[in-house]
Length: 415
Image: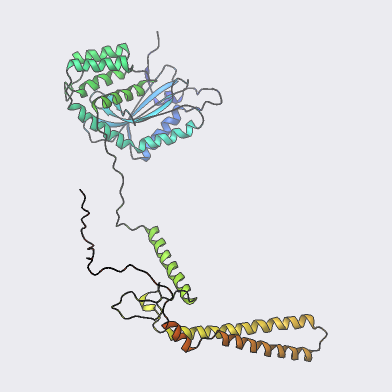
């Protein structure tokens, strides 16, 4: 006769000897699951009010239910559950559900409240990540179960319909043993607890969960999941909408603000550079009714900083040209002195001095001629500014009889 499943304490499961399988088998210890679950729940703001452990006689297959202090529903409290094994008979599972406080039975979401992982490879690392992910979505799973409970209370079931559901769970979906099916039948005749909605799907659902308390730890969690999935699909429960966190569009992000200011400063700097290089002068007339302004327009600079007199620009250019000319002269003199000192070691100091002075005179004359060639007369400047632009923006003319399009409501004449 097989030994029955019994309740264990936390330390009893911790003391179970770890398995020694092949290298391909990754051990997920009961203690690590306990610690990871407790840590994830506490980090999420949940506290455990009760712990319930069940296991086989050798402790190689174990399951746990942690009741949490969350939930405003008077009948359901949130729970976190897991199942684990050391003998390769079951994959690790965990999930979020609810505890029915009236009869201490449990509910597990049918399609999204559980996760299973085979004991291979990086199973130990993924176990931590998955526990955290389940806890992160715990409120959504709980709200779904509360919603489903309220829907089940509104669905009336007579004895015939309850018997049909019982047969499908037992014969088709195979989540009930013969003993469990017999227990449900007895509950249908003589309920052991008083349901708040007798004669409904919710009452029958609790008949089944009472029987599933006797399930083996290896199948208990999957049996719970299949039950809720079957009921949800049969009666077409609606999914609870997940509310995503929204960001106030008027809220200013500090990093975005800094990036925007830096971009504006860079743009202004680039514009100023183009102006100094003479690449940003514009001309033309945008409106026939307005007088033509042939003065250069400088963009990218605040209005108070715009240059109003073009003469100032060209005077600055002349000053800059003189500075550049002096720099050229100094550079050439320095180069000549170095060259004379290098190749004329046998020449006397007096002769070298005469050579240097002669070369300086030549360099001075060449620099002045170059400056004269680069200079621009006022007359040429005026002619340049008054010249018509060498490009034509060919905008299509607007007919006089066309009406302006109003920027308000527009009728697109949809059927």
